[in-house]
Structures are given as structure tokens and as C-alpha cells.
Figure 1 (cartoon, rainbow, N blue to C red):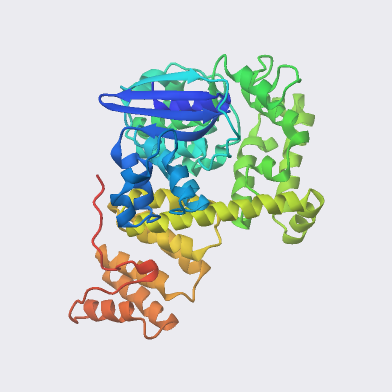
Figure 2 (tube, rainbow, N blue to C red; figure 1 turned 120 degrees about the vertical axis):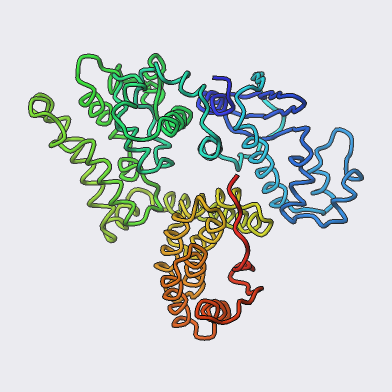
Length: 485
């Protein structure tokens, strides 16, 4: 498959070092990788160059942007020159480079007709800083926002699919996880499609996402993946041909249990909320509960099935109990866990600020992507959900999701009138006047003098419509919706 996501998959999982050359018409880009991580981009697209990115992110003033050519020095990176002259900080540069990488890569996802060539390299001189850009997240968002292409079906239809790495299953939606459960190492993709009721285009795109995230493999690659995940063990797990696929999955999972934490067993991050722990447990129970197996299989493989389900149950009981979870975290290395949590929180805050900046620039689709990444980590932040909902409310296709996220923001911060106002405006724009009035009245209960709530209530009950009221984050609550292209 000559597509950027397939190339990213190959480079990332094989930890390759070198550059991927991309050509399409007059567009030329170089993506540089160090041990599978994307570290730099060079592009001839003017809006993807570093100076433009810094200006878009408001890290340099208009005057500096206009004089950018004066900062170009032979054999020196523009970013390093700007930093050495005190124009930008180290954090400004790192953020802009990450944004540049993201923009440049995502802009090529819609195309399947480009020329791409990966040129391996022994390594780049000097110490390379760890990339702030996650290749799996690039793959996820890039595939989600691109249109389905008939070449996906041609690439996948006749393949026999096997379960792959579990590492990035957390990026999938509940519906996608239901599709993933159909992957058993026996059926071809086109056979799996016949057992589902979803639109074919959605299925092929989901399956391509699974493949590029490594959560499914093709025959011939699955054994290699198993050995990567568990070097030194004999062949087993999902590839064992002497047992039914259901039992093979149990054996594969049992083999990895000794090296897994409770969080890994349930496939959740250390920051997971109680609700996420419960959802993860039910997902695992659907696959591994003894009652899900035929009676004969249970009798023949009772010890293995019981061992797996006991481990899942033990993980759930521990992590769903606040005190037991606290003790477990302490015993299993709380310092490391807390460091991971804090790093995740810092990254989420960066994503939130990036999303806020993009939203203020009217770049709604990109803002939504960053904000979704932020709330995936910080499910306890009402302001994250509030800004995400406000961005989504500007895109007609996301209205239902916006409603859910407004409700989540209200649940987390019931004292904050802005959530009620945002939801009220959403209902108003959808023609649900009664619902809108109810939410605006709740906003006034939280903040009796809230100007936007008073203004819109007056409008809905017969008063004159007024404009210019601004809500949280400096957003014009009466702004027009963005039409989805």
C-alpha cells in the first residue's frame, strides 16, 4: 500500500532511521526519522514552513514574520537562529517543530497517488531530542479525517487477519473494538464484513486504522509480532494451529500476564478514571469470561481460561477500589507511575493550549483534534471538555458529540455557568427552544448576572437579538457555524 500511514507503520514499528521522500506533482517533502520517531520535516509548501508556523502560533510578531529572510543563515536551521537571537524560546521552538511535523504529515493523508521512497541512514550527528510528535497519534488522526478510498478494500479484502499488538487499542472507539473482536486469525476481512451491519467504507477505513496501529497483522507478520512482544518464548498465542482461535487468544494473553501491570491487563493508562476502569473490565469480560466459551473448550482448557479471567478480575477489583488502587500504585512503584501521570498531564495541558490557539484562529478541525487528545488524558478537566464542545458545536457533523461534551463539562463543573450557556446556544441553533431556555435558566442559577444567558433568554422569549457577547476563552458565543467540507 503506497500510502503515508503504511509507511509510518513500517518505519515506526521497525524503529528505522532515515528519511521518507514524498513527491506529488510539484510538492516535495522530506520526513526524517530516528529509530522510528519522526524528528524533522523539510517541505517546499510555504504554509508548512517554520516561520509560518511560528507566526500562526503567535510565537513571533508580525514584524519578525515580515523580515524572516533576514534570519536565514548558511548551514543553520532557522529555528536555531531565531532561538540564538532571543526571538523565540526553547519551548516555542519545540512546540512549533511539533506543529510543523503534524501539519506536514497530515496534509498528505488524503492522497494515494504520491511517490514515496524511504532512504535508510545510519544515524544523524549529535544528540537528537525525543520527538514530541507521536507517530501512532498521527496515524490515528490522519486516517480518521481522510476519505475512504477504494484501494483500501483492494488492499485488505482477501487478507486473513490476526490479533496484533495491544499497545494502541486504547485509541479505538467502542464500535471499533467491537469490530476488532471479530478478528480471529481464521476469517478473511471480506468475510468479517459480512457479519457486521456497518457501512463498508467505514469498515475498510477502520480495518486500515487497525493495521497501521499494529493492532491487527496479516498472515506471515503475526508470528514476528508475537516474538517482538515476547522474545524467547516458543511459538504460541494467536498463531497456535492446534487449538481453536478463541483458546489461542487465551493462551497468548496468559503468556504475557507475568510481565503486565494491572493497567496493562485492562489496557488503560494510569490516569484512567473509575468509569474507564469499569468499561475496560466489561470489554475484557466479553472476550475472556468462561461463559463465553463452549463447554468442551472450557473443560479442555480450564486452567488457562481461569488464569486469564482471574487476572482480569483481580486487576478490576484493585483498580476500581480507591484505597486498593492507592496501595497497588505505591507497591508497584508509585514514583514512576506518578511521573508518568504528571508527564501525561503536562502533555495534555500543551494540547489544550494548542487547541485553544487554533480555535482562536478559526482552524476548528485542527483544534478539535488537539482538544480530543487533551481530554483523552484529562477526563477530569471541565474546561477541556467545554472548549472541545464549543469547537465541535461549530461543525454540523459534530453537533451530537458537542452536546455530550457540554454535558460532561457541566457534570465536572456544575457551578460554571459557561457550560449551560454553551449547551443552551447549541440547542437554540438546532431549533430546540424549550431545551435552550432550560439550560440558560440553569446558567442564571449559577451566575444570576451572566450577560450572555440574559441576552439569549431575552431573544428566545421575544426580546431583540444582540450580538458580540463573548464567552469563556474569548469565544464569540454568537459566532456562525463552520460548514463541514
